[in-house]
Image (cartoon, protein in one colour):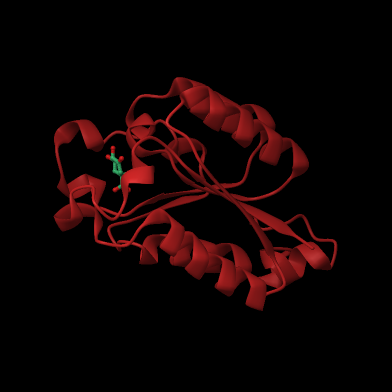
Length: 162
Ligand code: DQA
């Protein structure tokens, strides 16, 4: 069964109580449960993990990238600072969709820069928990005719990357 990784960075374990006006009231466990249901309906396994440590995220990105398994990545504040994460993605050719609950471009200037975005397939931000679902749908429904999407992966295509 194809596997998609959902990786979350620092302080995303606090969702539910963390600045709910910005990040909503759903916990990470609730968000992940909804994603699992959607993925399961498509016959896809999700691997969900969260860490407050940059090195954990680097290791997980490397593992998924080397396995050729797509990643939905909310790197939290590391999005704006981590050259190590950027290099792990570029170095393994990991297929990453960067997600954010909030619209980072509409917030403080230091959130406008992403080290991840230039090596990601795309960025989805500003839709709350729905940002994760939109990213999952992007991986699940990439055009099989182009060898993309999970159907394309099953058919032996190159995977979701167009
Ligand atoms: C965030 C946005 C980041 O700027 C912030 O540091 C976070 C959460 C989001 O999901 O909106 O931790 O990634």
